Image 1 (cartoon, one colour):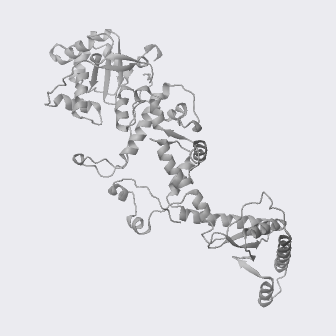
Image 2 (cartoon, helix red, strand yellow):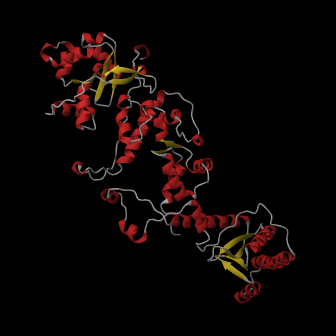
Image 3 (cartoon, helix red, strand yellow):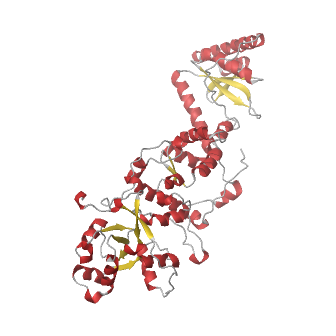
Length: 490
């Protein structure tokens, strides 16, 4: 069954070849797929007899012609059925007599079972025959034989020797149908596997992505949004719309670009590591190429970070019909934070000056934000004042001093290694490095978007670029009061 529309998704050929993708089959045979509606229609094109749907509503009142037709077919079926019963009990007849009996009664063979084929001229006759055959449902199973015009050209009745034989026959038909469907459904097998897993499906743009999926793999689009949501929920009961989820977090409410959203999340504590098992060949940075699957990885990482951030937002769950698409209390449980002692909240943040921020990296050992704050409090007198700590990623933390001037004092002391004493001197000797917000701003301006923020800050400090921004006025930073560590809760 041909499809007159297709989608094109860019991918790296080397990575596809490594996964065993057969390009010759793709070129010469194509990659086929059928929607569920097309698959249902394809049953009549396969040439295999199919079981009719159970009759729940009787046909309209019979005419005289209908009565005569049904009476003639009933008499024929009775005679054939009786001959089948007699033949099963008579074993002494030779092959010639048995063959003549079958020829006279019009009996045939369907596999190893006796059958009778009744030709029809209309779907009305099909309905009448199926209703009449319910009288013999104990040992007769009807099958529909499709014509090339997608109609029904005959009804084939198959005689069953017992109830067990009848159940076995229906299972054989179902297995044959499943095998044929699997052969023709093509790529929709992937969609069905995702649907059967019942796992949440994450999308960057719900409406655009799922309308395409519905039209190609489920069926024609419904006429309104409510019917569309209901139809989609039957296949994908749990789906997540990242664009809606981002709107619930105030700093991301006006952002629709994935890289911009990832960058903006640096102000939140969302330690999520993503491991990519097979990235394909490394892209050449000079050509501006992206690695295979990078966009999918970015969507997954963004969803994980947003789920981590919303763990403290105890808003009620929403249903799929609302198209809001996230029960944060349910799906965030699979995301484990590296530091459960630091609270994160996405609303009601406070504005603080960027001059009060100090970036710290190069720690000799891994520690949580609570551990780092405890170490800093014992390292220098400047930390006797109120301050907060949070990790931006696994390599770098940021310290917020609530007392103006404390950040400048700390930076000056660390940069003057000769006068350092105590544990702070030991930390600097082991590789501790610090920088103000201006260094982070230069890293962003110079485009040092490294995997680890610490590496980007190192490159910035080592850079020979001394050109400063003309506007050196301190900026304001959003800082949530919920980021404060309460040691009484530890």
